[in-house]
Each structure stands twice: as structure tokens, then as C-alpha cells.
Image (cartoon, rainbow over all chains, first blue to last red; front, side):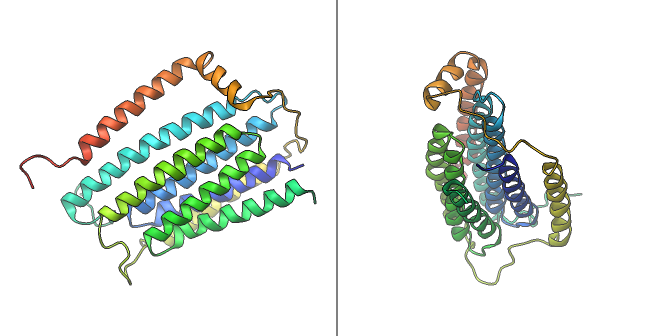
Length: 102
Length: 167
């Protein structure tokens, strides 16, 4: 028997780690990886809540499926943007790309 | 402690360790490998939560798809494993404060008593029930998300393609 809170706390830890990575990494691919960690934390939350509902009817898992799908689309477009950036700037460090910075 | 609890704590420690490696490793290839292990840990937790289909989808999509995409992007962009380059920007302190504040708040909200008892499973066949739900109740979001995937695929190809005659 594992209480629901254990899963939620684990999910918070994962989300925090991912958020720290997304805020501090300089490399754009590193930021995308940290984002994937955050997606995973959210999915864990959805599935845990879905299992611990009084009547577990899979709604949370359906939502997690959609999150995974959108994450896949996000990764594909994000990495294409990274490649485009590298072609134009010869770097993917996000603090060196300040074309739009005033 | 029961076997389930031992497995849970092992997998939790494994996942958190791998996640820490993802955000702290200097070499991006090491980060991608650690990310694979973190995804496997989360997949194991999905199995513990009786979500077998999601566990399989997690392994197929994240481990098989997204990590390979990441590795391609890492290989195609240079200077990632050079020694001595800074991997973090100047906001480490601020970011740590913000993260600890948000995580602390969420963890505090968790302490407010969620039920500890696991209700009995009402659905017997996980994959079959998910399929039925996706094609009956959730058929509209299902179609919308497939359209989104198509758009993302076309967009990624157009963004990543070299323009002809330029180089």
C-alpha cells in the first residue's frame, strides 16, 4: 500500500528538478530535456490521481496519453528550431542568441 | 515494508537520481543517456499504478523516439562536449530559490491528507478499455491531436530543411 502523497511528492521533486534545469541550462537541447522531465512529472501526477479516485475509470490515463502526444510534437518542432538556430548562429546557447533583445 | 513499497522507493530513488544527472551533467550525451533511465523509472512507476499501456507507450515514445531525436540534435550541433564550457547561466541562485519555493508550496499542499487506501480496480483490461474510451468518449480530442501531430511533422520538416541554393 503506497499512499497517494508519496507519488505526489515524487512528482513534485521531479518537476522541481526539471524546472531548475529549464531555468539554468544554457544549451537549448538541455532545456528541452528538462522540459521532458517536467512533462513526465505531470504525467505521473495524472496517472496517480486516476488510480486513486474512488472509481478509477482511466480518465487520467487518457489525459496522460494526450500529454505524451503533444510532448512528442513539441520535441520534434523544438529540435527543428534548434537546428535552424544552429545553422544561422553557429551556437545553440540561448544566452548568446539575443536577436530580439532590445 | 511490503514488496510494493520497496519497489516504489527503489524506482523513486532511481528516477530522481537520473533526473539530477540530466540537469547537472556537463556532457550533453551523458544527459541524454540519463534521461533514458529517468524515463524507464517513470515507466516502472506507471506499472506500479496499474497503467500498463502507458508504461509501454512511455518506453516506445520517450525512450525510443524523443531521446533519439535529442541525440540527433546533439550530434548535429557542435561543441557540446568541449571541456571547460559553462553549462549554466547566471540565474542559478534565483532559479534555485524559485524552484524551492514552488516545490515547497506543492509539497505542503500534499500534506493536507489525501486518502491512503487504494480503491479496487474497476477496469480489468487496461489497454482494451483505453482503446474503447479513445474511440467513443474522447474521439474528438483524438482526431484533433492526430491533426496536431501531422501539423508538427510538416512544420518540423520545413523548419529543419536547408533552403535550396543557399548553402
